[in-house]
Length: 456
Image (cartoon, rainbow, N blue to C red; front, side):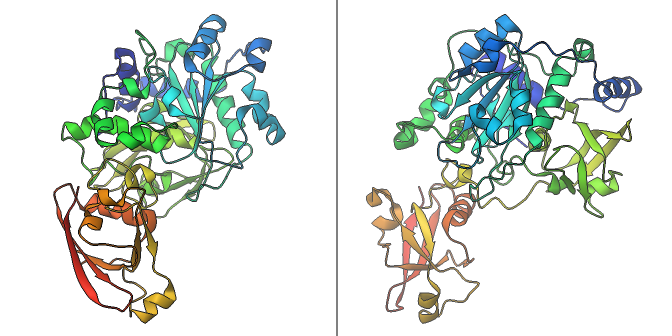
């Protein structure tokens, strides 16, 4: 899959590229012996808890890096949408998950509720963070080395799905890895970014100028959401005409795309293997522990999703290092062309984005059943009413005559039963700016008409 790579700083590019690289030779005997050490009994020597680190909760990454450099302590960066409820903040986690709270004392803690303030010299946002989830913990070393990411606790509706035990297990693995005295000799971590210059915010990213010229209202918003930040970074690839919306939209697929389900309380132990799936054919078994994929150490389910996100959608052999009954084994999972595709109609990073053409409406409501019956709209057919934003005159469909009392029953002859965010995603993937679009609509009396416009 093509990824958006922006040269915002040499250090960030190096760190990001290291996370995307396909590591060759993972199946060689020497590599396998190294992974046996990595996944075997730890020789970590955890330091005593630093009282200053334990009690501090920072709101910016540079201050955390300064403290980390002086104390040689790893950092956890919390990315949290203020609208998300039901998931504990870092300074409140002891109230719901004491085990995780104990592990948290060994990290310098940063909480960001607005991505305008993030320093992207250190934050591996594109490589590790699914932009359509609302709560993430990103772990980096004292030198800025990207370690891993945990989160995505909420479901597609945005409700909390926090699982006790999973975070503590992830942090324990990270700390055992980070403080293992043999780690420098393993050479499996990505290189630390070479940092220079001032803080690199989203407004300092080169693609921001092009993006903001097209989306000035979002560029002036007080809060930068994750899904909007994804559009800013994506803009460079779109401007270069290298973005492929037929394949590049399938980001951060879940393990079920390869036939796996992992334990929610552990994150990397296999709980289910789908019969005849790529994972099954490769010999993956229930109870196996996923240690690495494509040469990258896995600490959580999201680390696996990040690897899958970078692997080409056209398929190929994806090497896994698996721990089975204390023995390390290598399993190559053969993925077919199109393996990465899954239902993406829920993704805000597509619905409200710079991908394809604007749907010419802010939202689409499903027509009520009684109205559908009156207008004789089939249960499996399109029947939706447009909702316009604060400036309806900006919509080419509105300018062509579309109104909120219309019921759209087909678009260019197609009539899928979609509405809401699923419709917005469908439209952006189907049409590009300049495309000729025809809405077939019904008014309250059932009179049919065609509304034609050119997509923007």
